[in-house]
Amino acid sequence: MTDLKGKNVPNRLSKKEQLDRIIRVDHAGEYGAVRIYEGQLAVFGDNHPMSDTIKHMKEQEDVHLERFNKLVREYNARPTVITPIWHAAGFALGAGTALMGTKAAMACTEAVEEVIDKHYAEQIESLDDDEGALAETLEQFRQEEIEHREIAIANGAQETPGHGLLYGAIKLGVKAVIKVAERI
Image (cartoon, rainbow, N blue to C red; front, side, top):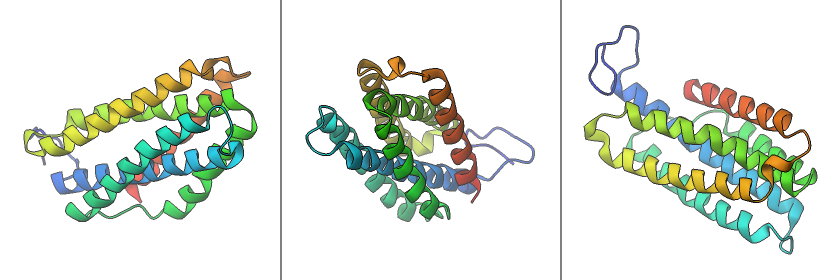
């Protein structure tokens, strides 16, 4: 069996299975990101000083989600079955961190986007030349996720009381969700 670059790798997924995983997990992740921002906006409302910034990031995530909705169909990929869980969990994570304050909401964004940046970079590296369009899409979205992380840091994410604990817990949770979404 070979990986997406054509290298022989024992006990690895076929190219179709790898692409299915990439599309499935990224679709779930973008859905979760939209829900996180919806949760934050539900708490902050329209008049909070961060609302316009969060709306901007959510609008970019909406575009990402719409693109992955199309990719699910184009690649005939199976969406994850955990979408209903992520629907509630993403919103709860966004609302919960917003209830802790602006800096905690930004720490949530920082942690999520840190994981997603690395995740997208690994996926791009794994793609073969014949998947250039998908690689370009992932790189564009990766750059926007980096922008979100930088916005979060500029808005006090790292000044959150207990930042290391909150940041670490969210990163761990995102990594776990990625592993689950890849498989189911």
